[in-house]
Length: 233
Image (cartoon, rainbow, N blue to C red; front, side, top):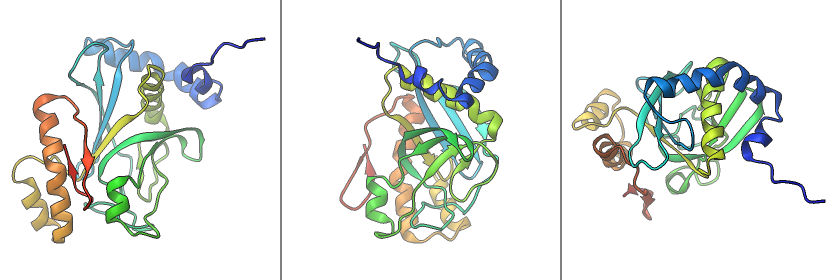
């Protein structure tokens, strides 16, 4: 007997929390699309977070389109650490950098959770070689030691969006995490305000062109990492 392939969404819906999320929140998520005149079918997803203002943005690119449009913004429920990248296990820092979602956990200790691929190629160069830390998630609940919690209520919405995007064939959903909105002059202000070490300032400067390019184009370019752990496009 040949069994039909089970879609990613169908597999996720076998979990009770995901099923409840769809029952309670799918109509609300679809209304976000309706309000912005966006097509719910076949979209791609991009997540962008800003640590200083504790906001997480959800961007959508419709099927056949080139530019992303802001769909919705969520507030962090809690935060830990300070501005600056995560560099070792136990430092309580929320990472900063260019990531993607690498894990869907429908049975999380924090209700539902979406894994971020920390440590990435840059982190492996710049962070503690033996204990860089890990298990960074965007999740429910309202506690954190380096993750981004949105509450159980709001993670249901983001989880649906991520499941739909993955089911549409988006293998890697990008997640950009910035210390702040890195407009001109902001890095210098952050350096003074947080008395940041030179390594952190230089790291922020490598993130700045990526932030600014998206602000202008609303498009995502391929981001690479050089041998020193610096991001570039």
